[in-house]
Amino acid sequence: MSDLQAPVFTDVLAARQRIAPYLPRTPLYSYGGLSDVLGTDVWVKHENHLPVGAFKVRGGVNLVAQLSAEERARGVVTASTGNHGQSIAYAARLFGVRAIVCVPEAANPVKLAAICGLGAEIVVDGRDFDEARDRCAQLAAEHGYRYIHSGDEPHLIAGVATATLELLEDEPGIDVIVVPIGGGSGAAGACIAANAVRAGIEVIGVQSDAAPAAYRSWKERRLIEDRMETFAEGLATRVAFELPQRIMWERLDDFVLVSDDQIRTAIVTMIETTRNLVEAAGAAPLAAAVSLRERLAGKRVALICSGGNISPAQLADALAAA
Image (cartoon, rainbow, N blue to C red; front, side, top):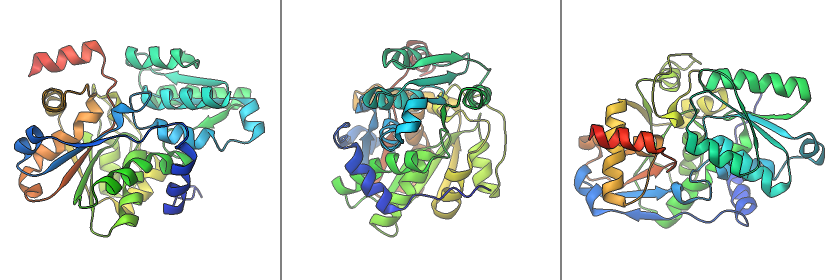
């Protein structure tokens, strides 16, 4: 294990101050239709309303804002299936930093177009995220770029934790927060913020059973590599990340798997009930909540809608499966 230090709540508070000039507070809305589906009170934290349509930009701004002058001059490189890449591209543009994003061959075209539109350079390499990550590490070693890992970065985790801080300020009585997990930065941040705000808030993670590396790593308390066959790129990691896992091993209350078909159903339900576009990872918390319906009865539940960057093909697929 590395000597990376997990962020603490004071880091989350500092991150909120740091990102406030650049990012709006996102809304927390309750929906009668979702409450009917789950049989209890439900709120949605709309991270899809952020400038890049996803929660990760909180971490990107918090991290790039703290780069040294020397790191900014060198430029940054990262690997992404889309939302993390948009996050770093957005933050790099804010602070005048060159950004290179390595993406897998089947990356979401909506997210790729957004990354390009934000001024980052794209390198397409590899069958999946982890192969793109290998290329990213190679470029960093060859050219001296500042390599931004998509999970093992304390500043990213502190930044995305601000979403949960906002959520609990707006609705202090929340009992359960359900958050999607790919690399795990969002869930790790949610755990840090929730545990600090009020004891007893339950944080539940969800991942696709077609890409269960993070789930298995959490269950077995060791880093595991597994298959990656999900269409939900925001949940699509083949290798678990150390720092988010260490935080989740200590603080995450539960972790569930759902099928890709359950996620497709949740996409359609979210669109129908919230009138918001939602990507697969953003709908996964609803899929998990439906599977835990009896356990959640009588509790005040918040779903983290992590992003809305669904491609037309993915949307058509979900609607056809409904």
